[in-house]
Image (cartoon, rainbow, N blue to C red; front, side, top):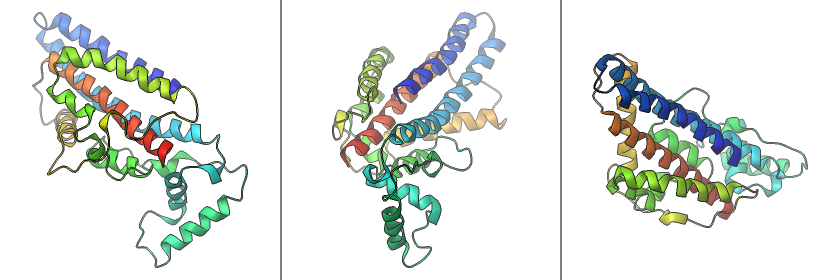
Length: 257
């Protein structure tokens, strides 16, 4: 997982290259500037979508060094649901059959799980429901409760400069905890203990807006660039913070379940 985060950093450099070029031509070539800004918007969403898949694959890859009987309970349950389906009301003895399947697999010393049970069969935009569904398969009941009133919520009141300074610090700390397996996460770090919210949380609203921006461009509903490059850079940095917080909350749950 730690190696994968280095790859994610390289992917974001692609956006940085486009952003630097957009800033260079902002006042001299409006057509190129608008095209670059629209491309950056699409890439930000694409990188978040790709991260969700990559994070799941690499977490499961790390946990495949563990015998099935020693896996976190949420991982066992989700993997077995892959075979019985995720509709718990499909038949009366659903939970009993899950328990029996877990018991059977726990007798194996070399059984390996696969990541497919923890992601989606089809590509999905990184909407709040998608993040929440993936996190729930690792035992997090509502990831937006964990984000609510956490230190990660503070990015919405921070200046762009402060976010820029915070990003490498948070990234370094999380990479350090992922550098060895088993991961070394305490319970609910960075104030991520679940806190109820009313209506839509700030991160849900953020993702709603981000996906809407992507939708209007990708489906040809908006041919004009409505975002300044500095706003897009700020969006990118917040998405990077969201990636790290998503990973931290899931790994904290796995380490302390």
